[in-house]
Image (tube, rainbow, N blue to C red):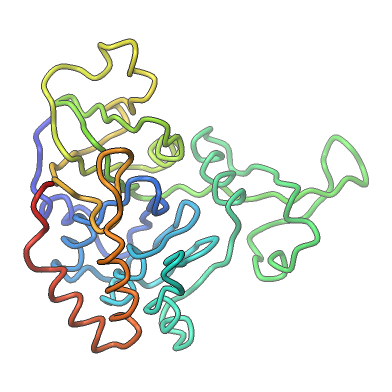
Length: 271
C-alpha cells in the first residue's frame, strides 16, 4: 500500500460524501480535518460516532458541513461548541438528533449486511417524533411488544487517526472497537497515523487482536501528532491550553477565523 499525502487523502472526500467521524476520545483525525479545510471542502454530510467536539465545530465553522447526525456536540469542560451552536441557531446546517445506541445499532446493521436493527430504549422518548425514518412497530415474534426499527447507516467513508499502521494497511487501534464498526460499515476507510512501521502488525499474537486488518482500509497517511489539539491513546495528552483558546476564540466569527488561520499554519512539532 502506498502512503498518500494528507492533501491527497483529503481529495478522496468529495462534496456530498457521508463521512463517519469518531468521538474526541477515540483518535480524531485533526490533521486530515485541517487538510479538508485547506482544500475548501464543501457539502459534507457527517455522522458522529456517536458524538463529536472540536473536529465537527471546526468543519462547520469553515463551511464544510451541509448536514450532521450526532448524539451530542460539545467541547466538554470547555463548554458549548460555538460554531455548531451558531449554525443551529442560524439554520445553516441540517441537524438530525440521535442517540449513542442508535448510531451504533445503525452502523452494526450495515456491518452485518442487514437493512435495519431493532432498538428498544428509544420508546417513550421525544426523539421518535422527530425521526420519521425510525419505525415503531410490533415485535414480529410477539404481538403487543413494540420495538423501534432503525435503518442501516452505510457511510461513504470513515476517517480516524491511530498510533501506527504497517505497509499492508493494517492499523493498530487497541481498545477502540468503535473504529472497527465504523470501518466495517463504511464503503471506504481513510486513516492517518503517527507512523508507518515495517513488518506486519498481525504477525504478533499479543497485539493482533487490537489491529484493524488492511482489508478494511483504503489508504493510510502519516501525520505525526495528527490528533492535536486532542490527545491520542497513551501517546500524548490533549493540549488543554489550545482547546481553551479555541473555545474562547470561536465564540465569534472573527475570533474563529483568526484561530483557523493559525490552525492552517505550522503544525506542532512532535514531542
